[in-house]
Amino acid sequence: MRTLTPNLLNKIPGAEAKIFDNLDALLDAMLALALGHKLQTSRFDKDAGEVVTVVWDVPPDYKALAFLIENVIGKVPSRVELTGKDGEAVRVIPWMTMDEAVKMGLRPSLALESGESDDEDVIEGELVDATPE
Image (cartoon, rainbow, N blue to C red; front, side, top):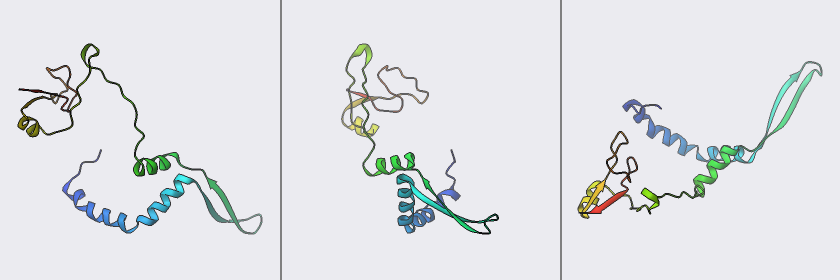
């Protein structure tokens, strides 16, 4: 993965502008990939002594199709079942900052950077359990 250096960060506004200026053409190209399209090329055929045009079909590209659908409609939800310790229910708490949790009088449990925790119900990096003080 590339590190975002200040030099690279300075290029982002220009890249965004270039994409915005060419958005129609980019969308057309993505749709052509997603739906499939025809390609045509011309070449000189030595045996025939003339220019020959060759046309072929390019099949739909699944990745382009999935990208367009997922970014317009949204990803298809997938069902995930979780259970806590000994099959107990897992409490789900909406995401909030540590400061917000403390202001609400909660004592949040967080996983440590290494992934270790003194609380077995903690998922690394997520606020998963907050008990009133």
